[in-house]
Each structure stands twice: as C-alpha cells, then as structure tokens.
Length: 110
Image 1 (cartoon, rainbow, N blue to C red):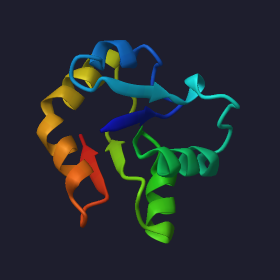
Image 2 (tube, rainbow, N blue to C red; image 1 turned 30 degrees about the vertical axis):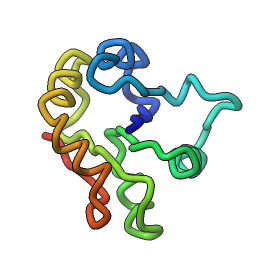
Image 3 (cartoon, helix red, strand yellow; image 1 turned 45 degrees about the vertical axis):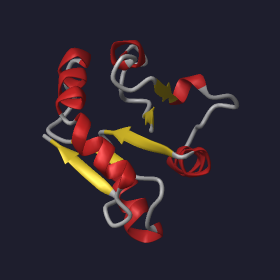
Image 4 (cartoon, helix red, strand yellow; image 1 turned 135 degrees about the vertical axis):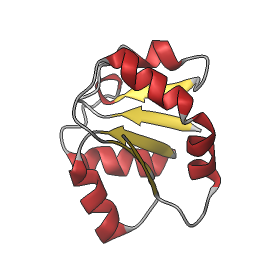
C-alpha cells in the first residue's frame, strides 16, 4: 500500500512514517510537478496510491469519478506533522482495510 501526501502536508512526514508505511511520496517528489488536484488524482490512480489530504476537493472529485484512488481525509484543520503521524499510525489497520476493501473509498480522520 502506498500513500501520496498532498501539498498542504509537510514533506517531512514521509520519513516519520517510513517504518509503518514504507512506500510514501509527497507530491513535491514527483516530476513533472503535479500542479492541480486533477493531476494528483490521475497520478494516484495510475500508480495505486491512497491520497492523504486536508482538501475537500478530492472528496468532490471522488463523488464524481468514484475510486480508485482512495482518500485518507484529514479533518479538523491543519495539525502539526507529529500529530498527523500519530493519527496515521493509530489508524494503520483502518488504512490497510481501506486499501483492500472494494466497497470503501475514503476514511475521514479527526
């Protein structure tokens, strides 16, 4: 399972999650740059990533297009990277289930 972090999440998160989710990318790692939500969406779909985001726009795209890609939607506003890391690790089993479940397309994390 692979996680793709949206631009509003610190790129430093990858290293902090390496032991739990070894395949993580930040959108800034990808070349050419993914400058729109649509490009991020298409990249995640093509390369089988779960999009990790604060952005409700991805939810809207999923409502229209279905999934994949799947979304880990971080709710409750921007949080420090360490708090996000703790939550993602806490939700590890749910994220794995999201990846495997053919009926579920999104997890909301508060």
